[in-house]
Image 1 (tube, rainbow, N blue to C red):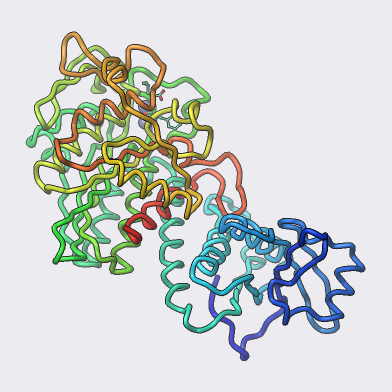
Image 2 (image 1 turned 90 degrees about the vertical axis):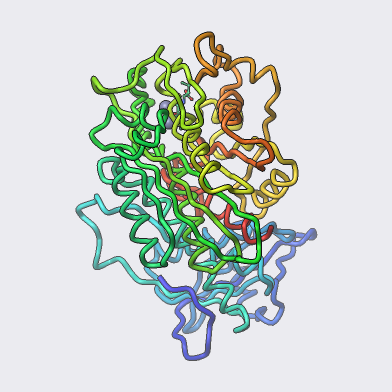
Amino acid sequence: MKIEIYSKNKKVEVKVIPVYENDDKKIIFFDKKLETKKIVSQINLFNFKAKDKEILFFNLENDKYLILGVKKDYTLEDLRRSYSVAFDFLKSKDIKNILFEVPKENDLEISSIVESLDLTDYSFDKYISKKKDDEKIDMNCYLNVSNKYKKLILDTLVVCKNVKFARNLVNENSNIITPKKLEILAKDFAKKNRLKIKILDEKLIVKEKLGLLWAVGKGSEFKPRLIILEYLGDLNSTEKIALVGKGITFDTGGINLKPSGFLEDMKSDMAGAAAVFGTFISAVELGLKKNLILVIPTAENAISSQSYKPGDVFIGYNGKSVEIGNTDAEGRLILSDSLSYLQKNYKPTKIIDVATLTGACLIALGPSLIAMLGNDEQMKKQIFKSGENTFERVWELPIYDEHRDLIKSNIADVKNIGSSRFGGTITAAAFLENFIQKGIKWTHLDIAGAARSDKKEFYVSQFGTGRGVRLLFDWLKNN
Ligand code: BES
Ligand code: ZN
Ligand code: ZN
């Protein structure tokens, strides 16, 4: 699919015209110049009301029109959803060449519409054998906006491409997206963009004493990796931002095996890694003026005679000992070792980690919100704002001493589960906090709910959503 600015030489089959219903129930064209008697008579004929996301499709002489209802005081998300409905409708009608009028020409509106169209155009159908290939049409979407928005559109499309990259990683089989495969993808990207890369394979993980990452990963045929990439986009700045993502390529729960009903989605347990990878690629491809470190600890939490066991104690890279209360609380283990390694060897000033960390996050915040916990008010405020901008919304949870008390151990420095199930998202973050050095600004994002969706919702695809990429990129770009 192509999304470009409209010019006179383009062939167009359908014009999409946004309208709204005003307080007197009258239909108003956002762009009055597009209002013609003939169109208005069609609108009246079909009793179209211009309700939010309502569409009316008709032929008029030799042209086709899609009149699109958008809220009068729309938010950017209203806009994304309305345009997504229009796009899906036209795609279902096999229409190739579409002209989209926009309610208002400015950066945020235009980038939101581009996101909507491009992200709606996604499906993970590689395993469907009877593909309607010849029916699959390559669409051309033309936006009727000034040429000065060309760069904005191209930049937005780069981020969308990487949202889809993250979706694909999550949707693909766990026997394909293995730690080794993530290593290969990272190496290829580093080579192509001449970035510094460091890979700790199983030998180095043992040699360097990343005992927690090794404990989680050693039970699988697919051995663990720690992947680190560096991008220096601003040599005048001393700031270095680390993006850390949980990369459990499949989470069986380990010896504390998950029951049926809880296993089937667990190829998505590397969605945090996918989100930070997609963000990092966007930043590099768009030449963002930031110094970034991408950190992906990746392992399969499998069952075998070599799997780590409940009740045992392991020592992390920073020397802290951890009692394993439950082998299914593996994410915090691989994250904490990578956080220790990162801080000792790369000296970041800010860290953001993203992880499908706790089922409790879904219980607390529902299926799509992201839980945010951390130690820096300004950073949290900024990320909250980016959540509102991108509609990848985050909600803050606190960490208090009463939560820290819950992960105390009798036989080790800390335990990997709380003494009760309550506050699971918070106790997980309280655990990670043990591995953050003084003075480092840190935010943890739990995307256990947001990473997947049971159904397609407008431009958000079913299963892997790619959430986190637009959120983090917005934060990096604006702060
Ligand atoms: N990967 C899961 C969390 C998860 C659950 C993500 C559901 C997405 C959907 C994580 O590793 C896990 O199993 N956490 C346990 C922790 C518990 C044992 C303390 C959980 O949330 O039940
Ligand atoms: Zn688990
Ligand atoms: Zn997990």
